[in-house]
Image (cartoon, rainbow over the protein chains, first blue to last red):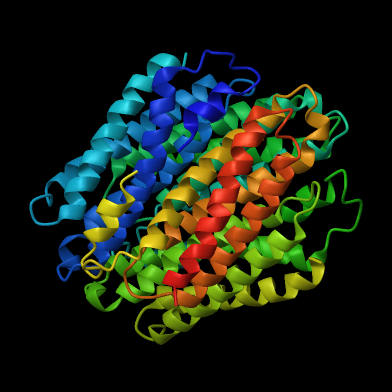
Length: 133
Length: 133
Length: 133
Length: 133
């Protein structure tokens, strides 16, 4: 991804890239992919009837991660309150999904990777809030 | 849209459709379309250089509305805390966008319609929170 | 939804709303919701292990319908070749999903409704191609 | 991103990761972010009234890239015809956007980076079609 290059060439940014927000953007897009793929991998498992909650959390997490990644990529004008609330919602989604996937991490390697991706994204969201105020 | 028909035939719902959440889903999808179209109409205005903030809020609002509409459409398992936080973020985005579009409502008919759509969606989000706990 | 109101107030449209494209936009947003809900309802079925293909097609269809609905909502400038290719892809996705859901229509009411929604959307996409050239 | 790790642990994949499709997924998510950021950076330019077509193509490209990245991440069951048509639409969108951004590459660094990202994504889409049949 080219998040830093893009944000740093925005006409209003001028060096103030907001480091934590950059990381948050990358983690959001990455986590959106990971959760989409984990939902799909869970769906193909023979024991899919025990992974229904996991798939649901994966899909919810993918949706909010995609929205947050896009919204956090914008620097024109200002929409602080919305961005903060969205990043907070994303952090919650990632925490819940990390927890759920973590419970199947030993059995399903895709859940282990997804749980780690969600944990990183939740932390990146928390850290990014310092850059959004 | 066929929100009610779909939700009411979900195997776990059995009549408990959560009326306010149904309306919220419809308003979210509708507002996602309206905000996408308003951003595009603003972009075509001769005075686009005075509508930059409006376009930005429109795009943010479209993103979170789309995510919220999808997430609120799911009834398998449970993800209450995430759904609440997402609906709250959506309400904030819609309020801000309603306010901004409202300022150009007299000049641009698309902003007037969009402002009303955002207000309805913000109210639907607030009301839906009673159904999500 | 307020598709007609929004498109007809776009500064470049001036009455030439492209009737079939309006219907296509509405069907795309509607079908995105229906497919998202059908994937989720299938996921909650006791026989989920026989609905894996259906869920996959639902999710694919929801993704391309959402993208097509947004793209078809734009009238600023021109992106005809892209819009045509996207609408065609959406028509294919809807046809496949209608077919798959149609096979479970007698057993699952949500699949019946979804199959009809996909069929309408596929037809609306085909009709809209006349407006995009 | 962790595309390879996720796809290679899907229960149905078993080593047959489809190398070109992996690259396509990564480029699609990356290009979705780049185009979202480029639309926003163009919007903040003083000469925004000359970048309307560019912003429109950026937004269209972001939409289809996001849909394609998600769809191409799925390996459960099969949806070949839909995936092919979607990847082809994505390639068209990327080519058009690369071309348009390329025209402002000397003036706007974000357009230069975005043009390159779109070109890479278009090529990755073309190459991926060999893996989808």
